[in-house]
Length: 300
Image (cartoon, rainbow, N blue to C red; front, side, top):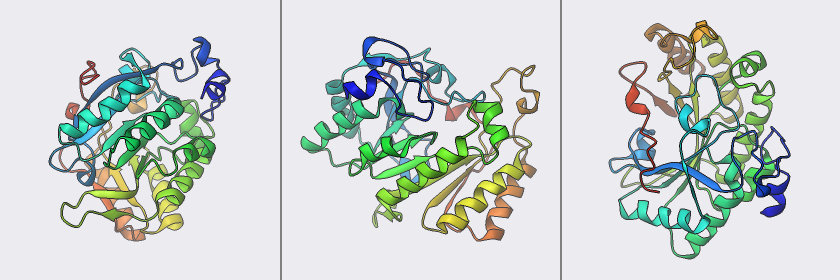
């Protein structure tokens, strides 16, 4: 672990930060695990949250820092407290005791070595809940391979097809290259979806999320076509309409509005037309504050 964190190249930023010595990486974090919330979360896909909730740990920092991030307070490292590997292990069991359907690791990439250690400890002590890896997908395959056999459900975003968009909004022109490779590795590890016959909860598999951005339905269609051509119905696809305008209008005026119902429906119709059968859509308002929890240190 120390070797990886002393010259950090866990993600495609390859920032080479000596996080062990306290240097801050591109993600905004040193080697100490920092998290902002650990609680039951009801706003994931139904097969993840169920009726009792997903046991979600929100980690601080991010290697993407998208300009429209809904979790910007923790992505930028403005919220969170440091915890140990042993404490993270305890949190997993506390979430289970509260009735969590799974352990859901949100924005975990920059803490993978520490998370791996905590998961190994937890599983040795009898943790039997599915583990969800919830990521923006700007990942190295080599980092994901550290988690093989420890993660049951991968919940990656596929944000952009266009390098121009990923450069403008996430400063990552190579996003699709790395994200598409990462999703391929995720599918290799866990395979086709497996559901609990009694509860309908997902026990194993990949759900790829795509958040449609205002004015970018063409890019969304390219992403959906890529996913369907590559995986058919062997993965689940979650087509999301919850974009919330949080950016500075002067810098990104094109993002200073909600997604229209017409835009969302066009993308849904396209998904049906090309044969996507397994997945999720969102009903109701096209944006809602209810999707954004309070990052107040609960459960840490």
